[in-house]
Image (cartoon, rainbow, N blue to C red; front, side, top):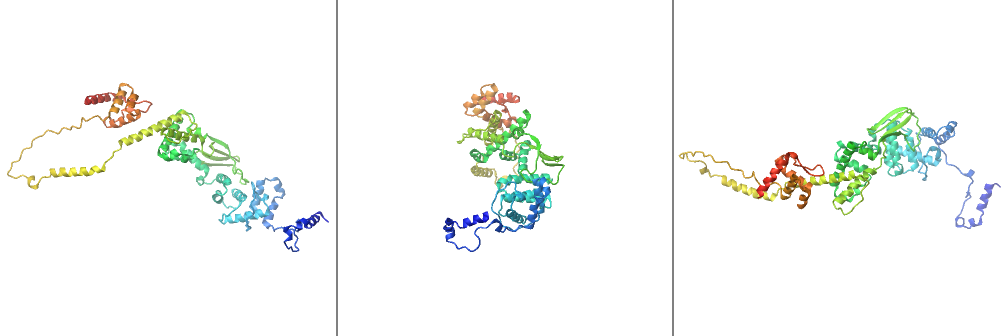
Length: 509
C-alpha cells in the first residue's frame, strides 16, 4: 500500500472522526470524501493564457529583464477578453502576469474587458496597477493620446477609492506626457503644474493682484488659515495685512539680499536625474536619445544620450513650513493687537517680519480712520425742511401780474449802483481743533509732540493724518510727512503753518 493510500485509510477509519457530528448525521454517496491530487480535475486554461505563460520559459526570457518579459506577454494578450467573475482579494506589489495564477489572470482580463467598454466595476488593487503598467507601455492603445485618456480615466474612477496609488497615477500621467511629447496644457490640473502656477505668482508678485497673491500664499502655506478663528472673524483685515507684508518682504529681499524671498522659502531651481515611471514596470521599447519638454518657465525636462534630466524648484510640492510660519506670526500678532480672546504662539520668524507686520497693521488702521473721517453723511429727514423753505422763498419772490409791469405814464427810474455784498465766510474759525493745533504747534517749535498727542488722548499718527486731511484744500499737499518713525513738517510749508497758527491764536484772543 502506498503512503498516500495508507493516510487516506487511516483518516476515513478514525473512530473519533466517524463519531463526530460531521459524519454521524450525514449520508454519503460512493463519491470519495478525500481525493488524491492525481484524482482532481483542474479547470481548463485558455489557450492564450497558456501561450503567454510559455514565454517565461523560453531561452530568451532567461537572460532578459522582467520588464521585457512583461512587455512581451502584454503584447500577446493585448486583444484578449474574458468573462470570469471577480476572484478573491489578494495582495501583490509590482504585479506581473508571471506572478499571477490562472484564476487571477482570468479575473483580471475579465475586469479589463469591462473597463475598455467603459464599465469601471469593483476590482482589486493589483489589477489597477497591472492595467496602468500596460497603458504606460503602450499595450492595447493605438496612440499616445488614447493612452493618456485611459490613464486619466483610471485615476479619475479609482483614485478616490485607492488613495495609496492616486499619487503614483498622477506622476505616471506626467511621465507619460513627457516621454510622448504631449501638449503641456494637458497637464494643467496635475499636482506639479498647479504647484508651479502658484509658485510663479509668488515669484512675479509685482504683477499679481491681491486676490492672486492671497490665493497662492494660503494654498502653499502649511498654516491652516481657514481654521483660524481670528481670520474667520476679520478676514478682510487679515488678507490685507498678509498680502502687504509679503510684498514688503519680497521688496526687501530684492533690494538687500542676494536671493529672493521665494528662494529662501522654496529653495533654488536645480537639475537632477529624472527616472520616468518610478515604481512601475516599464520597458523602454522606444529608446529615446534626445528630447526636450518644457512645462513652464520654472519646470522642464530633457533627454541627452538616453538619460533624462529635470530642472525645477527643489522644494517638494507639499505645503511650505516657512510660509506657514509667516502666516502664523501674522495671526498671532493681530490677535495680540486687537485683544482677541484666543491666543496662539507666533511662528519662527525674524525681527524684520515683526516690524513689517506692525507697520502694515498701523497703516491699514490709519487708512480706515481717514476714510471714516472723510465720509459724508446726509440726513434724509432734513430734506423735507429744506424743500419747504425753498417753496416759501419762491413765493416771496413772485410778483402779482398787475404789479410786474408799470404803467406807461410812470417815468422810468434810473438805476442806482449798489455796493457789492461782502462775503463774511472768508475769515471763519480755524479748520483744526484744539488737539490738532497743539500738536502742530509742538512740531513747528520742536517741542514734545508725543506729550501733546497724549494730553488730547490721541496718537501722533492719527493727529498727523487728520491735519493733512483738513489742510489739504488750503495747501494742496501733505504738510506733515510720517513715512519715517517720527512726523516731520514739510519744509516748504513750515513758515505758512507758523503764520497760520499765529492767526488762529489771534482769533482766539
